[in-house]
Length: 299
Image (tube, rainbow, N blue to C red; front, side, top):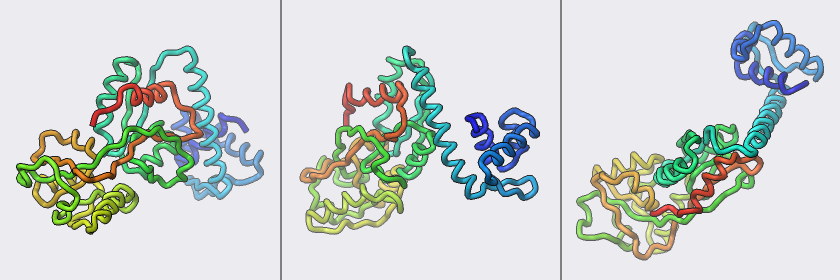
């Protein structure tokens, strides 16, 4: 069994049909059927249950699929590593980001592109669980995120480059506290709050709640929402205030909202770049990580 056969097998597993897989591979159906038969004979197991033209993986097929995907990923990464020797940076750099960190990217990408104009960026946005899947499936190399990274995988799978922490601010509608530019934690107790929280990512919300409790009050939460954009829209409408990392607000510079520093708060939002420990990082991704260290982003 060789790499070519593994690629054939993965195509069949994805398409669940020999005919469609053959079209995907740009080959005829009979040779592909023969290759599958040879693999099953060599392994001594059935890899697919056949229901007419439809194919479903057996238990043995599921195991082989996972192993084959891992082997193909390792082979591709090895080829990339070798090809990059003595070459300039080029190709596509795929990264992911939570929405609350998107504001950290424009200046870094601008700086990076001036130095490496042949690198094309692909950026995917999502929550921690979605971005964890993107990393696992090799759709992206890096994630710019709030920490801790709450994916569906063990924390020890990831390497982390810590970035400067981000202070929290409270965001209120423009008509509130017009004469104020700052606020104390105890003054927040009476405000209706909009909480950034999802069923799967809760650590940022917990940090805010714990800081409120440290000052002796429970936050008056009137709405929970997983979207920063929706929360800001609710603030603009005058429904309540929200506590967010300060850098988030650079994505909303012209809206009818006001940002107040919290004078006596000690909590901050931790920020980092996350990638798979086991994965070879391309030269482009390594250079992009270094960009964050060369000139620290401004909050």
